[in-house]
Image (cartoon, rainbow, N blue to C red):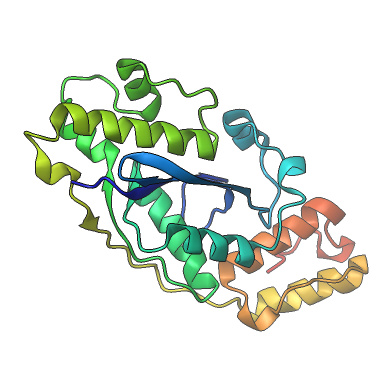
Length: 244
């Protein structure tokens, strides 16, 4: 059974790994059952964090405003993980996001791992809720800042150790790392209409757009357009017609 691993958690702007964005990464590195290192970092999203996300996570736009370059943050996290297997609660949710970000910046994040949610569903079938919060309450694991990446990662690491203590001997296979499979949907490049509209927005509002239009995906272009309109407003002449 695994005794060395990286347990990580992400906070995001939504539930879609194809459309939404990472706003915080938290992780602990466990070596032979002991926490030996940690990783905590905000990630600045391309679109503003909604009030709903702030109400859940406590993370505001001001908190992410000074985050460093996203490619450097992702690189540092991938380096932090080394070749360790990973652990997470509802692991594939976080794994999909991290795999997409790594691919975007020409890195890979292919790992094996253990999902504590999957384990809990097998060994605690009668427990009404298998959420991280409910499982921590059930086992008396203190998590002072739920829905913050680092604290959730640390709580998940403790949950993994606790589940392994009680059920490892009789359910050894559940605690063996399995290869994680995820194939990203085909990335669609930004349309010519989107790129033209972005150019028109930039000229109209007299702003500089620090993005390479030729590498933008369709979803990235859409988010960028929404962000500019939110910050600067629409072009007056586009009223009443489809913008892109």
